[in-house]
Amino acid sequence: MDLHHNLYYSYRGSATSDVDRDRQLENNLTKALMNTLSLGGEEVWQPFIRSLGVENPKDTMFLLQRRDLLSSPAASKKLRVLLGISRHKSHCQLDENERDAYESVPDAWIYGNGFAILVECKVCGDFTTGQMGAHIARLVVNGSPRPKVILKTWAEIHDFFYRLSPKLQISSTQLLVSQFVQFLEYSGMSGFTGFRREHFEYFLLHDDEDSRLWVLNQINEVATLLLNTLRKFSTSYDGFEIGKLKRTDEYCWVAFGPKDQKYRQFTHQTIAFGANGLRIFINAELKAATDRVKAVTAQCQGRLLKALLNLHRFEDYSLELDERVQQQASIHKYIPKIKIHSSTLAESTTREVAWQPFCQLVDHLPLFELRIERLISPSVLLKNDNDSRTGGIQYIEEILKRNHAVVALLNEAADQ
Image (cartoon, rainbow, N blue to C red; front, top):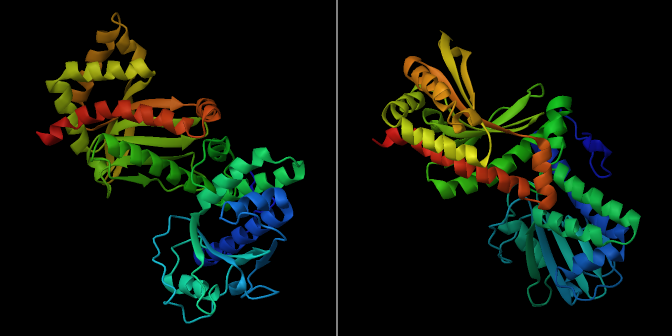
């Protein structure tokens, strides 16, 4: 993956601070939007401007970083719009009577015959009432009505151009728009829009810092979507933790459960991105969690086996048990003890041969790690997303839903 093959993406440099990088990205996003509209021509700017309530835009022009229009004041236009674009949904309470001490300097203008659109863009944080109040004041003169205010997210801008792209007739215009759509995705402004090979190939190629940040942002977006689903199953899912993704790491994990790392004390659900796909697993590792596993296997083996058989009916998995041998205070060595394919449990002729040794090992080992794991290949996730942009996420959600029945059972002793 090379982000810099994109027409709009720029080298930002690793030495700059996060604030400088965000400011640079904010400027580049604004410039990319204006260039896409102006260079794309009427086929692009007509539907975009109409979506903002301007019914018949004509003679449209574009400006960057200007206090006002070149010809006449924007406030003199019949139709005036303040368009704010931010990364997340804005909660800014607009008040034209509250203004920043500094004069309003819009990020961009879109204007034409009878209309003016003042554009203010954000990458981090929300709009301030002072800044937006100053922009509103710039669009008002001699007691004229307040301008129309439209607040959008970059994800909504992405969705607009994503849907527009297939309708474009000119190939060069379609290329321009598709590159802008890709730029929003690479910049982390689009949210998660489906699985792609780059999510997994990164762990083979270990590309530059920009690629690492893009992958990390995408994993965070996926985790946020999945957490919202998990919360429907149980109130115990109130947070997630993402592993530190270093450039040399072969995978990146996300663990779901009680927040503030309390999930480690329970059996919980984890996903891990890697070159060979997405691992989705139930795991118990710390003693508080594995003691509950011991209690469940001792007191209700039948219920646990039934839950595991139900899990197999949806898709195969592996049941794995490693012994944890303490070497230093917080360092353990993991020794594989048993690995059972779920089909072995499903077949009556082999069930007891595998199940009883597993239960005996759980009872015998003082410290262990339990994993109930599936590996979903990139091709499966990509195929689901070909059918629907969210098909891959829905497939994972279904697995997490079925996993939860086992998680709840293995944590049952916590409530006793």
